[in-house]
Length: 157
Image 1: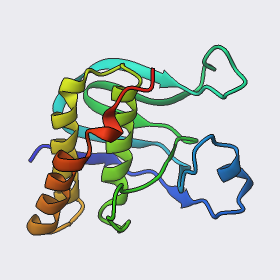
Image 2: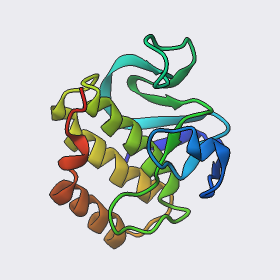
Image 3: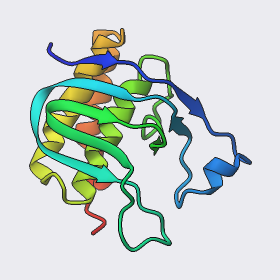
């Protein structure tokens, strides 16, 4: 297992009436407050995804996240919705779900090819194990992603 979190940031849960939650086009549940740095088992292309509001035509110079080989950096201000499907958000699934959302968003944006979906799912499983989730539950979540995650990786572009 080569996946780990080399810098653990901080995140907050956004409540239903929270103004920060209403700023986003989708209903996100969590907001990164301090930078996260992940070491991933798989190697990804190098690219940065910048913030872009619905009102902007061009991306702002503030990055949301960047992949660089086997490293992922997620910057403050990035929002995500936690674990997908019927899964419950637990302490051991929060950071892995953050990494996984960045990867799938990159696939939907066509910054990563769909071929990286399996690598992202595998890195998610390894991060669950790193975070202390048991072998059985990490396998269950991985196989659920493999079986039902293809829709979440469909391109939005």
